[in-house]
Length: 118
Image 1 (spheres, one colour):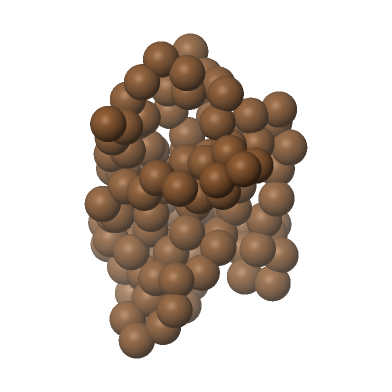
Image 2: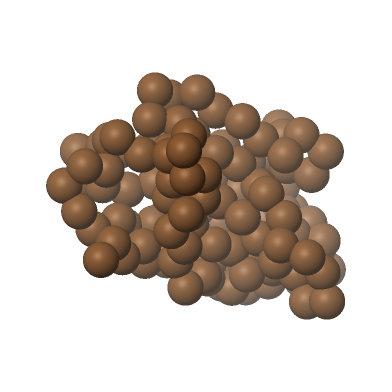
């Protein structure tokens, strides 16, 4: 069974930066689309960014484009989310996800907490 393990969350001040990492088990990482979702207290889970197995990148334009950057390292089975200019409204649990076009965002990590203080 696949495992997705996030790391890199924490407490940061308004305007600060964090880099989230997600390590994925398995041998066929490069065949999968990867992404990040987040869920703030009392809110629904929200799409943040995704990078397809071909390298196509999409962002939640309204919320994060221009501040967050998603990337992947297929040699290390890892996906990253560089978050700059963080705002208090970015406070949430961030989840790493894996999927395919047939089964989008099928597999989820346990999440990592990001807290941005004002």
